[in-house]
Image (cartoon, rainbow, N blue to C red):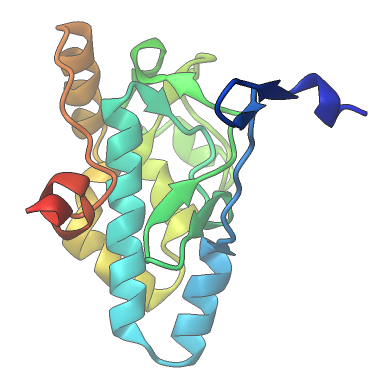
Length: 189
């Protein structure tokens, strides 16, 4: 009965039309963490590198669109049958322009007393410390190597701040989700 609210049949003079007011399309993806684990178990370094490159590219597309994903863990991204990485966990997103990207301040003599994992500096609600992404994302040596080769800038607060400033200045870069060979303009030629 809920479908009847979104589908309509128009019997025109020539032929009937089926009008779908709203459609939800879903493609099957492999969660990126599972893809990386399987590729690592198979020793498929090339597959890991391609997936990590696409992961970084997906993040950079999100950044260009003024979106900070919040939780950048591999499990929040999927890989399509064409090898594209897609972000699909939207419950913690923020605008890049609302975030404050900071470096982790160095410890001083007084903070040495704190135990491991304890924060020795003030943290605001919108503060983000890109340097801290590494321990959560780069535990696997093959993944770390590919990530550092292609997307080490994602661990630099300056990279994030520079992009935030570009957005605030009104820059809107073109984002192309598909490689040139897969774009309509290329296929028509």
